[in-house]
Length: 305
Ligand code: CP
Ligand code: NVA
Image (tube, rainbow, N blue to C red):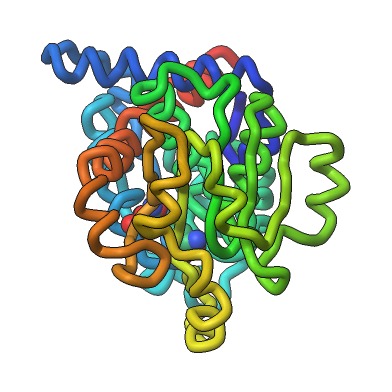
């Protein structure tokens, strides 16, 4: 693994190794053990969109692994004034040891990796949010023991980055994924061909989807960049809210997950969020451990190359 651009690019083994390492790094951190494979390195972090969890977990993670994070708001560098991503990549590639990028267009992270020739991590694009999925899979392992044989239901905008990354996780790992979304916001386009026979079911029935679920997952109905569509989205997506009625249909021991930030009484109720706060914020904490695993693997691969 030379970059992390999407779950689509990972094999089953690569995902399993990352989750094993994330769990090991979490235990090491708790015991005070320190390993610093990024000692002497500087990692760039180019962000075109807002972030709390991703920014903080990468800054802390790079620091804990012995490296120095360099946060670059896209508007503060020449990229924001129109310098092409490929030129930005060719400059940073000569100065830093890796780069974490949050932006709109997936092609920008692909181009950065190609032109920069340094380990490149997709910290969210409109296409995928692989770092979040790795933390989510770690949380499922910790809370449910395994994802094998489990039913995960994604509620909301099925065609957003999270719905797409979940679909790739189901394809690579073989668990059952149901995407419950209205037709307007159902997974669509070329991805359906690429997913082929993945164990992914698309439905517009939120109630049927919840029956027998082990994980009820949601995300904001208004992803970054879609703010102009907010009013229509909130109306159309309203029947897909995670509330007590839906939770009651899920399996005993089912968990509720949210990538956050959460918008109360929109994609899930305040009551469900607060009752499930421990599992949701454990999930948020796992961003740190899962991303440290990615950083360690990429640094190892780059050293070996
Ligand atoms: N879940 C997530 O990526 O959160 P941030 O947007 O705060 O980074
Ligand atoms: N789908 C959301 C995820 C936020 C972490 C967005 O892109 O805004």
